[in-house]
Image (cartoon, rainbow, N blue to C red; front, side, top):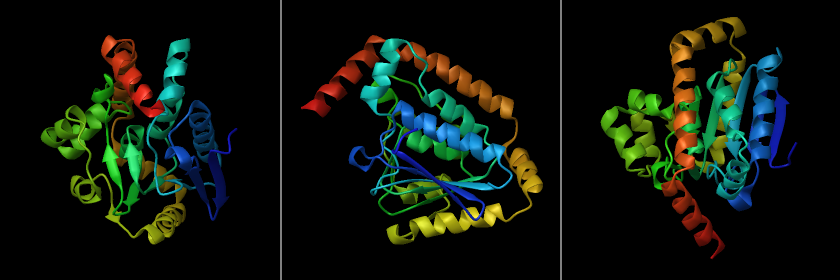
Length: 249
């Protein structure tokens, strides 16, 4: 679909690489489509027992490409991020993330749905939805308070403050901090270990650990409705216009 998402399978692990380094792997519609298709393939294949997700060029992802996102919204199309978010939240295949550099917006919220996450000292997490006149997504409105506690969730969602890997590890968002040169190997080794486990037991254990999927689905649906309403607001229009004008200047 696009060269900006690379997919390779070996040793039972599907490796998905966001490959748009010049834009810090900011996500476009075609990139979302490619990643959604890859995740669907992983769940449909008996030979793929784990997924590893990473970015290229020293970044995980800068989140949505706002120009592409705004163009989609202006046409009235449903954001393709919607399908990706729903798929990764409901994924039956275990998933490991390797985070280097920026992890903005969905780059942070998707991590709530990963089984294992490793990051470098350069990792920087941020959920700037409110700064854009928007609301959180990917069920982060319930998962962040549950994982972080309400005080820290308010700090990082309502204030939209950035935080580093030490704080992310303390909050339970990531499993460990590793050197940049070891990040890929560390994440892949973890993915291979997951892939080697009995698959039926793995699926059952993940379902038990994650609890009621309907609660997550309901939160995502509520967020999507609120997100759509916020996107049409004057606050969001002004924030997007200011951001795009700054990026052009």
